[in-house]
Structure formats: structure tokens, C-alpha cells
Image 1: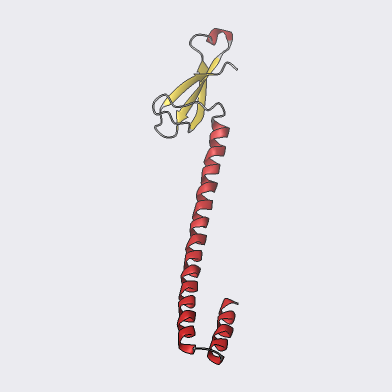
Image 2: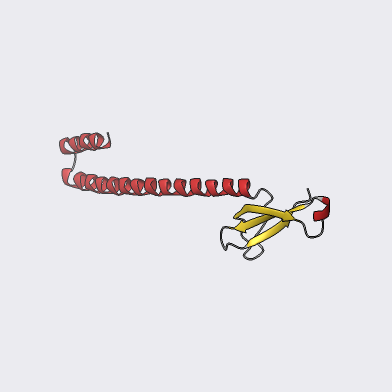
Length: 118
């Protein structure tokens, strides 16, 4: 579509006015359009990459929310990427049925114990 428009403009230039000057302007215009089309293509590729990264981040966030809904942090490295790997009686309140959740950090593999009293 744009090429057709440029061809029509070029035909008008040839029919009227200083053809040399107008051809130079038209050549510059074509060059700029080519640069804009390349830039547009690059931006579309970057957009796709960014969307893929956003989708990956959302997947990780969903996994964190599912695996670690309390937002507990690893005792060793502070990461929130924890997976529940078991439970044990709480050392202080185990006699009354209180348990600790054992969470393994996916970053450093440290196992942390958390008591949920809510």
C-alpha cells in the first residue's frame, strides 16, 4: 500500500516540477520508510521476547503462590521459591498436635521448618 502511494507520488513528480529535487526527496523518504520497517520488525521481536518473559514470570509467581502461600523465606538464602517436602511435630507444641511444615528451597536446597499457627 505504501509502495503504491510512493509510486503515485513519483509519477506526479515526473509530470510536474523539478524532477531531480523531488526524486531526491522521494529517495530519502523511501530510505526512512525502510529504516522504520526494520525498526518495527525489531520491536515486534522484542515484544514477543518480553511477552514470553512475562508469561514465565507469571508461571513462577503462580507456582510460588501455590507451593508457598504464606510467603515464607528460606532461612539460608532468603528466597521464597520453596516447596513443601514434609512436616514434623513442632518441638514446643507437638504434644498438642501442632506441626511444622518442612520447606525445601529450590535455590539452595536448604530445608527450613515453619510453624503455622493461623
